[in-house]
Structures are given as C-alpha cells and as structure tokens.
Length: 295
Length: 308
Image (cartoon, rainbow over all chains, first blue to last red; front, top):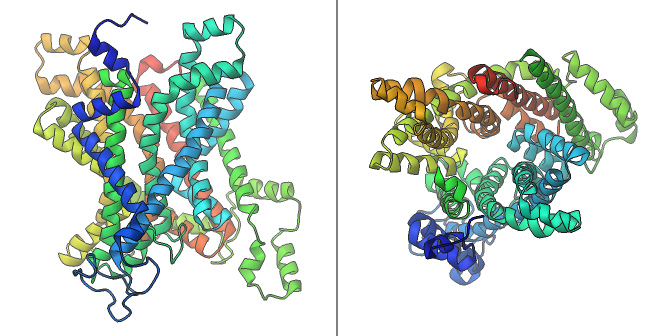
C-alpha cells in the first residue's frame, strides 16, 4: 500500500463511523436523507403506543368500518373497524425486525462459511460452495414458501426461512473476497510468523471484509422486507391479528375497487422503507468500496 | 469447448439431484403427519393406516426417495392429493401460461432496461440519466404486488383498457401481469447496462472505432453494446429465478393458472406431491436457464470459451 500523503486521501481511507457519516452527508444527499428517514421510522415503530391512542388488534369502531380518512382516523379504518394508521405503525415493527434479524443471521452464517471456504480451500470449499450452489438454484420465493410450509407460521419461522434463503449469496461474495485477501502480504506475513488459521481468519480477513459486509447488510435488508411482505401477502407469513404490511395488503385487496387506500397505504410504506435502504446501501457502497466507485 | 459444456451438463444433473433430495427431505420433516392433515383429525386410525400404506409412506425414507427419483426421470411426479390428478399433467397444463407470462415479462424488462440503460449511459449525468436511474431504483424497490394492484385498479378497473383477470382473456390478458412482473427486473437491467456500457466506452477500441470515422450510433451499437451486453446476459439468466418468484404473486393477483398459483394451491391444500413437483420443476427451469446462459456466453465471447 502506498503511504498516505494528503489530508483528503487520509479522509478517503478513514472508515470510522463518524468519517463515513460526514462523507455521506457531504457527498450523497439522497443517502443521507434516507438514513435520517430510517432512523425516524425506527423511532416511530418503537414509540407506536405513544404516538397512537389505539391498539392494533382492538376493534375500535365496529359501526365505522371501511371509513374514509378523517381527523379521528387519518388513514381511515379497515374492514372490521381498526385504525389503519395504527396498524401501519405496528406493522413497521414487524417489517423492520424482519428486515434486520434474518439479514443479521444470514450475514453471520454467510460470512463465516464464505471465509472458511475461501481460506481453507480444498474439500471444505467444495462442500460449502456446492451447498450454496444448490440453495441458489431455487427461486427464492418458492424456497421460502416451502420452508414456511415445513416450519409453520410465525415470526421466528420467517426469520429462519429468510436466513436460510439468503446465506448462500453472502457466502459466495465473502468467499471471493477472501480468495483475494488470502494472497495479500500481510496475511502471508502473519502465516510466516506462525499465526494460526482461525486467528488469521478472525483478525485479518474478517475485518477487511467488513466494509463489503456492511454494504451487503444494508442492501439485503430491503430484499428481506420485500420477501416477508410477499409471504404475508400470500398468507404464509405473519398471521392475524398481528399487523404486517404484507398481510394488510392481502386483506385490503378484497376491497381494492371500493377502498384502494386500504392496500395502497401499506404498499407505499413498504416501498418507502425499501427505497430508503436501497439509497443508503448505494451511498455506503460508494464510500466504503472505492473499487466500485472508480467505475 | 464441447468438453467443457459436457462437464457443465454433468454438474447441472448433480445439482438437480441434490435439489430433488433437499426438497424431499424438507417436505418430510414436517411436524405432524401429512396424512392426518389430509384426512382430518378425527379420521379413523385404520383408514389412516391404510392410506399411509397405499401411498407408500410407511416404507423407509430411502425407498420412498428412490421410488420418487426414478419416477421423476420417467416423467412421473406422483399424484396430487387434493386434485386427484397426476402432478405432471397439472404442471403440463399450467406451464404454458407461466411461460407466456415470463416471456412477456422478460421482453418488457429487457426492452425497457436495455434501452433506458443505453440512453442513461450516453447522456451521462444529464437530467434524463438521473431520472432513469431514479426510476430504476424505484423499479427495484416497489413490491410486485403493488405494481400489479395499481395497474389492475387504474388500467383494468377504472379505465377498462384491459381485462381484470387473465384467466381466459388470451394474449391481451397478459399485458398487465407482464408489466408488473417485468418492472422489477427492468430496473436492475437498466442499472447494469448503464454501468457496463460506461466502462466499455472508455476502452481503446472505442477510440479506434471513432477514429476510423464511424458515427456515434454505430460505435455504441456495434462496438460498445456488443461487449457491454455480456454481463447483462448473465444477469438475465439470474433474473429468470426472480421472474419465477414474482410470477407466484402476479399469477395470484391476475388469476393466471400457472405454476406459481399451483404451488400456492398445493400449500393451501397441504398437497405434498403437487408442491414437490412444482418446486422441482421451477428450480429445474432456473438451473437449465443458467446452463443455457453459460453456453451462450461462451459462444458470444471467444475470450472465455476456455474457462466455462
């Protein structure tokens, strides 16, 4: 590596949290805006009981079903008289959880297996990567459907299903990265002074994969959110009376022609969250992955 | 090259075998006996036993798997529990519909994606470029069911331009589902086309082509695009998998009687042979698509013929 000369160059190589935030706000306004939006959404999801006076499963207005938006119910009420905005806020909890938890699991598993395959090579590599090939051959939605069928409904099973579907692509990317890192001089140096394989993988390879992993994490969250909403839309994910955006779209679909808002509001919510994560992921990639930036 | 292709085909067969085994295992570790769910909880225990024996579910696992896999190779995927017809027959009637939907969606995605990608690359950093790239990000971020429902509400219900359900409407019924399904892929294809074309346009041979007096259009189409399109082809093969995933949703919304809808029906009816058959069939399609893309790739790009 060349010595770092100017201040700008030093800044470009600085991957600390504060430096990345500073550059995100200076260089990529949409990504910075998305980051703020995501924080606000997380806050709104956590503070849902404070923001809304209603409960997500309680029927508030049995006589006031399918009501149009009003001051009392800013987004109207659903088919059995529940406040739509309230359900949207509680649905954010599930969407964000489903975005983050299975992605974390699949990233951890994918990174561990990818590094192991790339660093050890040989039989370990063959076994792990052929398994990944098989997993990647399935259309993801159908695989998730089969897993949900086998495990049954429920949010924990959604976590498991999405993690099982997504680990393989992470493993493939991390393995490619590891193959490159394995040949670097510092890994060779570590090996020559007798550092063990496990320690090299944890201390030298993993930290250098981190920037890509962070980018991958941000970009995999939206696809997990989309998968959950599709599963719930098909009735295979979150079950009533819980509030999931996909489930809301599914029940609202019966009233599409009379109350399009009922299914459009949660769809829009999904779109905004997914868009925000995609913008943020793209922005982070430009900053953390200078190779891609050159292109 | 022939030897490499043979090797790839052998690999494909092995992966297919592994896929079949995996599906088989996954569907058999279900908590609760499939027969009980099928016949109801209050069914007579003797009837359950007889049914289990009739379906061969009392035999050891490897015997069942062997019977299944040898059936698969002779085109027999078992009999659907809920519809009481051979699974292969059900798939054969559903597949043309899914194929039609997927082909139309792929056309939408490729035309829209490649054209927008080229324009964005040529007019780099213009308003057109930014708006196309914004739109493509929107394309990737919008759930399939949202596009489908908005199209259904506006174009089919409000303006009555297209039929609401595609069941018996012929080709015209496939327009809306194809747009809904292709929209997603169009976004990622546009982004990829733009970035690879921008990269290719910096190569020396582009300067050479310009220097010998070719017009800009000719340079882009014959020299730039030919090289930029290679990664896009790989992408298209990868997209086949997401097309089939999205088709499940699209077919449900527009009531297309395709493979995806069959899979959903199978899950609702807890119909293991049907579910197994549809998943295996779709996965085989994706695997074959990847194989074709690999072969096509090596035909189009002489540089990697040896590596395939």
